[in-house]
Amino acid sequence: MGTISVTTTQNIELEYELAGLSDRIFARLIDLFCLGGYIVLFVAIIGFGNIDPFFSNNPWLAIILLIVPIIFYHLYCETFFNGQSIGKMALKIRVISLNGNQPALSQYLIRWLFRIVDFPLTGNLLAVILVAASEKQQRLGDMLAGTAVIKTKPKTNLSHTIYEPVDMPVYNPVYPEVIQLSDNDIRLVKEVILNAHRYTNTNIVFDTMKKIESILHIQNKNESAIQFLYTIVQDYNYLASKL
Image (cartoon, rainbow, N blue to C red; front, side, top):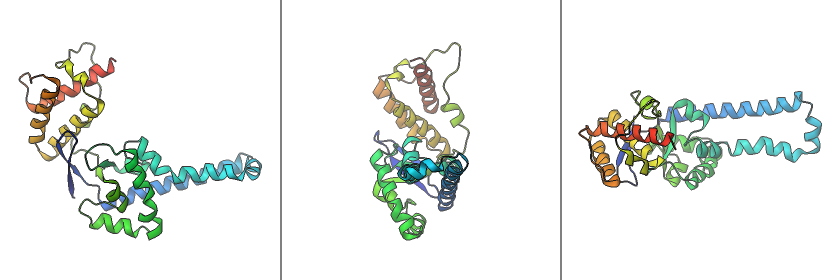
């Protein structure tokens, strides 16, 4: 399985496992099944809900309620659900920007606009060929938007600990200055932790620790670099929950 290295805007290099062609095909099939289910449900509601006469007099409303959600399904899901549609959630894959951040709305929009070229206009062949042959396993929409699709499932259960808020009656933050960081900064720290364990990359851990020390004007209190990052996340989760 291929991997991709991205350099974040904080100059931290992260490595991700790319979603394979089979993952993306199965995710697409699940999405098509969901959309098909929506169509069946919509028709059933009209048929059994005795509202067919209403839609007969207002056909434009039926078209909007049926077609618009289908057309904008992928754009809406990826924009509001962290780069994931229902199919991508099921396969544990998501869209990221090549700079390591969550894609901007403009990037999601480009991916969505070029779906018509990748799929309907070419019978899905263009998307299959490009994902299978390109270095970063991108379809045309990904290439133009500067995005890639990666696996989100870590090889360990670290996400169960680093993403959960601290739930302790008494907890004294070690580095209270951490509250100066943003949610996006902490998301990056979590990504670094997962990357470090997934790819045994200690360099990014040390670089990230030094970056945080510099930004917050603090010094590691005799912890290992990876433990320092854990503490930073834990402190932030606790302090943010108190706001």
